[in-house]
Image (cartoon, helix red, strand yellow):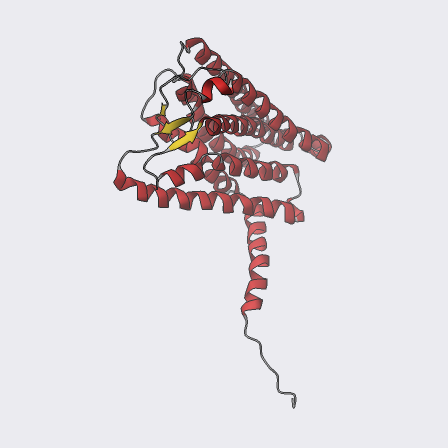
Length: 323
């Protein structure tokens, strides 16, 4: 396989976000700042969850894992995209292209299942509060995280099985800022219609099944709470609002791109940026701004780490030995 592909197409040319030279510097600064905010914001969440005993609960354990996946998802292509803004010729090796396809499906597939796990955690907390500690124990949380990575691996390996053996014998221009699977498949020197159908079916089954589970869990929670009181209903809706917002922002672009993989639209690049860059930065904002405990713990962590710095910066006072 490697011999066949590397002897003909050794690299792919990425057209990036725009061909305008005037926008390259702006994009470089803009996405550099976004990437730094993504990494620092999600690292702060991970540090807060692991260091604060008050946040050692299933919900925050899953949130910390989501932040880790968001860092990974933002890092598989964003650093290269930022570097390409300063390069006239944007290329990526064949192996590098396959690696990007591997990681994007690993992280997106894993995040889908992780979001379902977080919805299940909220379902148990709201609908079965007396059994919450028993059901959502440490072993259950660990198993849920392991399942998310396992599903991501199965998903990405199944997608790669359709791609790595394709013959690429000439066309090598990818109209995107990373190796997007539907666009790369179109460059193969054969009729890729059946392969594209399989790719859509693979991604569609995972996306629609997890999306259906999420929506069903939210409906069950709201219906269950509606029989209790209006105050409980309002509290449940407030808790689920952040989850629903994340689900819509994450699944919307993915479903749009893979429902019409045979036709490319200019908006596809915007949607690809959305679920690879904007979603990882929105997740920490949405989950922290609506959570008082999380905001208080983050302020405590920031204070703890800034206080030693302030003390070290204070001038030394030499006392007079006569006093």
